[in-house]
Image (cartoon, rainbow, N blue to C red; front, side):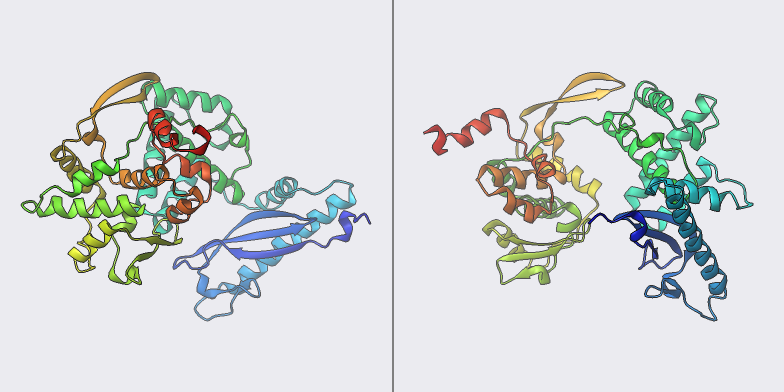
Amino acid sequence: MVISITEIMPEARFVLKEPEAKEPTLIYLFYNFNYKRLKYSTGEKILPKYWNSKEQKAKQSKDFQESTELNVRLKNIEACINDIYRKLVNDGIEPSPEKLREVLNNELIGKKPKNKTSLFEFIDIFIDEAKLIKKQGTYKTYITFKNHLTEFAKRKNKSLNFEDINLEFYSEIISYLTNEIKLSPNSIGSFIKNLKSVLNEATERGVNSNLEFRKKKFTKPNEITEKIYLTLEELATIYELDLTKSPKLERTRDLFIIGCHTGLRFSDYIQMKNENIVNGNKLKIKSVKTNQLSYIPLNPVVLEILNKYSFQLPKGISNQKMNEYLKEIGKLANLDEPITINSIKGGAKQQILFKKYELISTHCARRSFATNAYLANVPVVSLMKITGHSQEKTFLQYIRISQEENANNLLNHPFFN
């Protein structure tokens, strides 16, 4: 039986962007119709404690006198989207999320007497909100992004606004960041990623209607950098170093070795506690970054270190300081194998020669775990359960074996015997 569009009743729902927030958060309209969905920012905000999620409206409260007016505005938005949907159907036009958004923007934004928010004004709003809900590192990348965009507009004598963000702008900003600022492709990729985050949010809120940034050519460039891992033999050399005369290096070494044998991120292995140990042989820990729970078998080296500290690991230090100490430790372990790194700076390819210890960092622990376990033929699916990766493609980026190591690993495979 063929079901016509008119036979499927649309449904409007209002949902908070951050239901657990301690600050006012945006209210989104979710409009489900004909097995499709429109997600639309109403531009309205409310403190979650004043929101009734079941009834999808503000609670009546003496502490929130604006509840009645807010609920009326939400009802008007619901009535408006329903009217738009019915009119499109009656006119023989099949509704789509894009079409509904376009008409709803015209209806709602066109009626607002206030001046339209400019691109840079919205970036300031976006960054101010990010400061409340994002991690410090992410917030700092937004500040860097804004500074680069502001300087670009100043140098090029441009008054940038939403309508100016097109493929021509894309080519200009990539050229500027590459040739004048001399950023690496990965840094430029971060800039484009942050720009698109701002534009997506502005579009959701009905502030921006220019969708040029969603074209396929408007993509973030990146480069594949050569990143090292430490072999089991190199890790053993580091672990066997006598660092008792330098407690800071000893504590750093021990934390790093735990990371190399568990695959945990720096932010996770510096916050391990006794209660994370299950049955004396497994680690149960929730990732700070992803909030995902992992169970990790503990090998003898990790258990030895944990026993050394009576299962209360030393307090972690900053990522920056730990990276500095790791290079000292690598030098003491004579990890001075020459490593050539291919890089792109200012659009030009270059090769830089390093000694291996100069490239050791906290993230090297996670790569070392993944690569060494992979070489030991631990199933990829099992490793992904530990590292928390949901996609094999992403996980395999951690595997840093050379062509020769790959061949050596296959020597005992039945196919080659």
